[in-house]
Length: 323
Image 1 (spheres, rainbow, N blue to C red):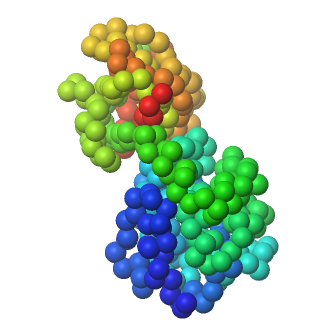
Image 2 (tube, one colour):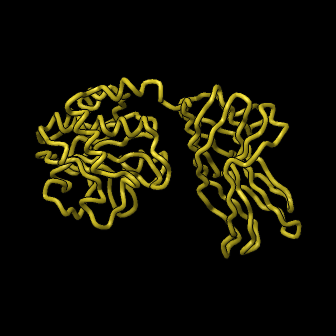
Image 3 (cartoon, helix red, strand yellow):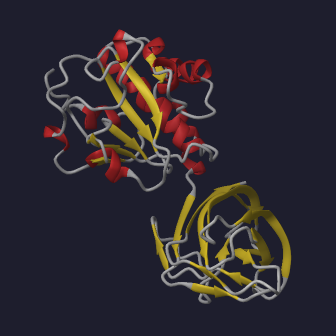
């Protein structure tokens, strides 16, 4: 098996959606001569498939055989050897001996259940394909002492799920059909001013990924259809502050028409660095329903501080699950 050109077929046996990245059958750092293990990773970012495919500064891609999107979609990246685990403390989990799966996650955010189910199923099908026991599925943190991924996952419990899937393939996939989230990815297309002593509801000019058209005509609202459990992650960049000045960032619930503030579902304070900038990831988990809309607010509380600027590179990703 010099090149693992069967990987797309293996992935499709999971029952989860699969996309083949162009050129994957000939992508790799030489052939993969054998498979003795599977290594589970997180990417430490969002929308980072291109890094897994092409690499990053100082490390040429491909970095893994698969990129597992937070939606549960499996992207097949490479059929050859990948730079995903070196140095390895296990002879069965070196770059030359193992298949790597990079799962989209920033290393802090909760794991969507649909992504975990796809993770279990993909590992199980790889074990079935290469005649491996579930014990050969390991976390990067277990075979490389310098790595923390995949974050927060108990790998013994992870392997128990994989073992169950090996013996009863497809069961979890069927159970999770209704749990696929609505994914809303939003971007700010221009700089936005926060007045001194005032606040700003960030305007979203761009929406992509699954295209649910969930932000309102005013550019700020994310509306819930039905009762939804939300996992959110916003990357907020604010400039123009005096060094050390504080601002607040909040995911806030408003009435459906957007006229009445209800509460802050998640609010944190941040202090500007020596350059007068705040750059923070703003995550959280909370509920929405048909009576709510969601806004990301930035509050500049002190009247003696000049106006601040929410930079156009600010963005947000919201996963909404049925409750």
